Image (cartoon, rainbow, N blue to C red):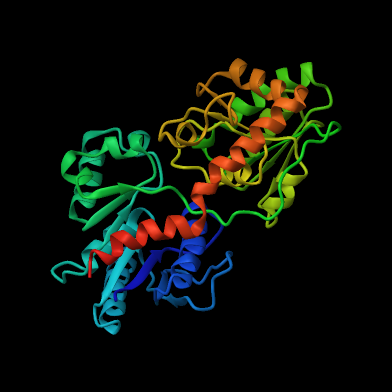
Length: 355
């Protein structure tokens, strides 16, 4: 039985990092041996004690780091007698892993965690991305939209697997006095928080009790605060940084909003839906929101970049608590299929074929 090695730069707060935490736990509960290999000793997610965590020694200098990472991954595989399957979850980690396993016949499962159609628009960038996934033994995508980005030679040895969830015990319930809107994510251009701030001007005009709390960190914080203040929302919108208690945030809010232009399958959206709260999301590149949301059925799906549509959907759920509750319940049911044990079993079917 091959040991599973998940390779990441770190386990800081992030989507791929959360997936590594949840998936590794489900793997060991299914009887698999699992190692998480990290470039940096930065761990902000809880890890099952049955999972071996290895910090790969680092060297200073960019060029030295690249070659060092390749050598360290190869050495780790050697210590495991090469009876492993590697799952690199992010960016350059895939390149390093493929180089480390070159000519070894060690299987590598490439994972696309974002929206490559938005990140790789020029020919050379797209070609490099194609070649990396072509070199992998197998590929896992989150949505059909992302799969369609790649040529048939990649798609024919791939599968679509959604993100795993540890389903919460508690569930969201409507509160007639609750008008807090929340959004969680990196303060990054892909999230298009300016769209949400502009939409909230109209939301607050129609629902004066409404407030917006944004959780996350990133390079755009100062610019977003300046935009908030220029829109006269300084008493209405607050930035809270990273939270370690996402469940509590959702249980004490009226609805969740994502205004992204592009991303893979948003973990914060999935966690909100799983707890049974209503969501409003843009139909962003990557297709993750469209994969999960039936608009007006289990949430609202609005065109990306559309201020008026975003504001209208938020207002609708703030004033119609009956619809908000109905959509939240439908969202929770939709997420049952993402139970971590179910998702892990889909991965294991692929891994077991590599014996």
